[in-house]
Image (cartoon, rainbow, N blue to C red; front, side):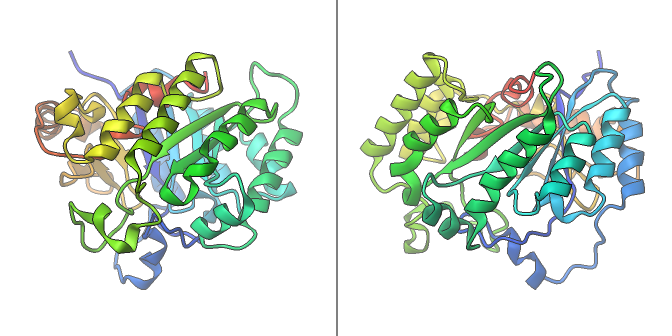
Length: 341
C-alpha cells in the first residue's frame, strides 16, 4: 500500500531580513548561488500535483528564511486553500502591518506562528538582531486578531514559537504564562535550540564553543527544572503544543544532543511521511541526506512513488545515526498537524 504524506514543508524563500543569533540563514545574501528560487507558477504546479499523492486536507507549512519577503505569499496561501489543503506559516512578523494582516486573513490561512524569543523586549530584539522586532510581533498579534473575526470554528489560529536558549531561559515560564492568559493567542510551541541553521561548518561539539554560549543552556539542572515545570503546565491544560513527554525528552537532549535519540529509544518520524520541498525545488526527506529529487526535473508525485523514495524512507526508518533535529517539531508528526485543528 502506498503511503501518503502526513504534512509537507515548503520553503518559499531562503532570504531573511533578521540577523538571529541562533540562525545563519540571513547570511545567504553573502553567499553566491546560481539557483533561482521557485516561481509562483512552479509552486502552484507542485500544489496541483500534490493532489495526485493525497486527497486529505493535509497541512502545507510555509517557512523561510522569512516567508513574508515574498510579495506573492498571500496568493500562494489562497491557491493552497482553494485546492483543498490546510496552510500554515512561520514568520518573524516584521512585515505584518494593517494591510498585510487583512490580506493574510483574506487568504484563508489556517494558522500562523510568530517567533517570539523573549518575554522582555530587549531580549527578543537582541536575539533576533533587529531593534523594534518585539514591538512588531506584538502589533502583528493585535492586527491579526482584529481582522480574523469572531467565527472561532473557522478563523485563523494565532500561535507563538519560542526557542529556548541560555539568553532567554529566565523568561520562558513568564512568556508561557503570558501566552496562556492572552485570549488572542491560541497556541505556544517551544523549541530547543539547535546548532544554528545554515552553518558553513557543522561541528558536533558546537555547543561547547564560546561563540554559542548565549545560545546553549549552561546549567543543565536549571533547564531541566524549567522543562519539568512546562510539562506540568501542559498537563494542567496550558496552551502548549508540545506533549509532556517531548518536554521531558528535551532534558536528555540538553544533556547530550547527539545521543539522546539512542539513549531514549526515539524513532525519527521523518521517514513516516514528512517531505520538504526547498526554495529551489529539492525534495528532502531528511536534512542529513541528499535530495530524493527535484520538482523542476520530475513531478513530486513521480518522485513520491519512486523506488528512490522508498529507499530513502527505509533508510530513515532504520537510521542509527546520532542526530539532534528530531527533538523539536519532528518529535511526532501529529505535533505539526493537530495543534490547529
